[in-house]
Image: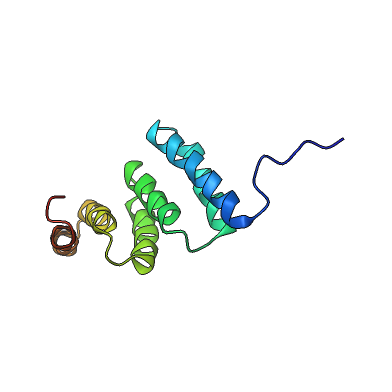
Length: 116
């Protein structure tokens, strides 16, 4: 007898379930586990802003700023008015020595969300 699949049968529901788990792991600092689940979400729905953005956040957290840029560029392509994504893009750019570009993203994040 096979084990039951813990994921809901519909891809959108499965992605939402995995995303919730990934966010909880990420908040607890279990970055590798969270990252794996974010990637699983993207296999089910490649256009999930939160999963893509959070992968960029994790890459920033571990100091892989070049990889962070790739994820954050994709996230901003999906949701160009995300103040938080612009802020995180600024962080990655700043750490890559691209201060002027970073400043532009920081400033735009403040335009989008002045109390950020």
